Amino acid sequence: MLKEFKKKYFSKYLEEIWDLKEKLRVFEEKTKTLNFDFLKINSSVFSSKIEWNSLDLNSFSNLDFNKKTNKEKKEIDDLILAYDFAYANNLSEKNFLKAHKIATKSFLIEANSWKYRREKVWVFSKNWLVYMALEPEKVNQEMKKFFSEIKDLLNEELSIEEIFFYSSFIHLRLAHIHPFFDWNWRMARLIEKWFLAQKLSKDFWKIQSEEYYFKNRELYYKNINLWVNFYELDYSKSINFLKMLVDSLSYV
Figure 1 (cartoon, helix red, strand yellow):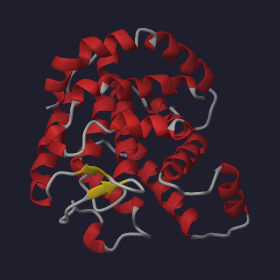
Figure 2 (cartoon, rainbow, N blue to C red; figure 1 turned 30 degrees about the vertical axis):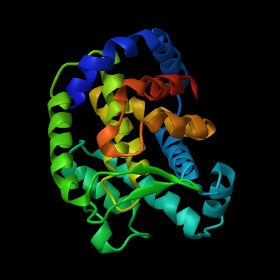
Figure 3 (cartoon, helix red, strand yellow; figure 1 turned 90 degrees about the horizontal axis):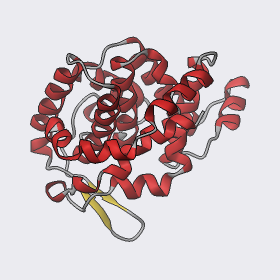
């Protein structure tokens, strides 16, 4: 499926990211002295804020400094540990499931953690149905296929443009499969950087894509919404979403 996407949409994508190499040059210059640990915390804070966590970096840091905690801080703490795990381990289906268990340790019961969902999932806005995800009995098979394709891509030599393309499409496709009972969006943002960093270098964990997505949250959700159910998704409209990762390079 991922390679089929490339055949259909890559040429259009290239037209939209014509300045990728210049953005990469600026990103590498700006981040070469920055510490991963700080940026990891920032990424976890903003990925959580996209999901309506109210803590910003200052309030999180104040709680941490004063050795205080609450539900929202614990949510970020656990996500930080998931980023640490991903940073230290290769991307695979087994490790991805472990990362989900780490990220949801304080919030999901064992039956819903480290496992794909066994329930139907609908995504709602305040007033209406936004998206109906894949049926639960098909999730396991779809994820096996998904990670088989990722494994192949990790073993292939790809251009920098292809790596960014696939990273973004992995994010998008995981969000559409919606494999978990909860924490799907956070895991989609995590796997995007995980693939990118493994294909390029660990320096690419420094990309502040989560902050960029949060600061452009309305556009982020608009671009990820390609139709109301899994079987009628219109990926011909995906380019606006795919280019957001490239645009986030400038957000450091």
